[in-house]
Image 1 (cartoon, rainbow, N blue to C red):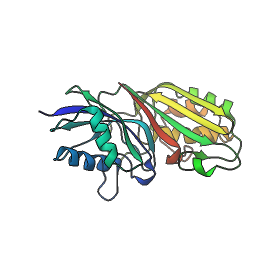
Image 2: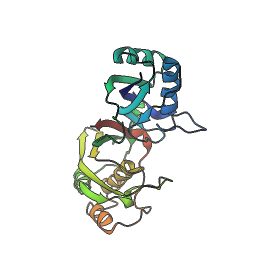
Image 3: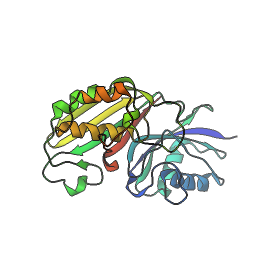
Length: 247
């Protein structure tokens, strides 16, 4: 009898095309499924909580899998990590209800974006921190970030996903901007996010921090539901982490 498992996974996305399987590139999903198939002695699908882009990282990504040859969760963690590459780790595993779905059962997600705002980016931070050497107005960025909170149509802050979506309306629960020395951390929680939405919001906040846009323009873009334009840049992927999924 098969058992369903919930896996909490951390990964460095630098070498991968994102979570979702792709035919001509190596993905997190493909790498997980190859290890799971070996352990299960038959193919296994690893259904993810979201699609992360190429180069994006995760601290608390969630996937669910069904194994026809059940393994105790602690043993599954050890067995998978002994065969996975060093840049992917299963942090925790647990039995899940048969109807648990990593994506559909989620109540919300938190993403964090890491930006180093100083003269020189230390090399050891380079894979995980974006970089901006020009001074940023953190108070203005906080003002702008607060304007994203609530239920809005985020069409102006999303890229074309090349697939049908039912709505571009999302609910942002909180959006904070914290600074410690040259390190700035953007943390956003919401019920879900559109394709490249977080990177687009951060990209616009950086423009506000540089004085190129006013904070109230966020409200203007949301209220007018204007189509996305070059005013909204997409922040580079390496600073972004899927931090946690809530159930």
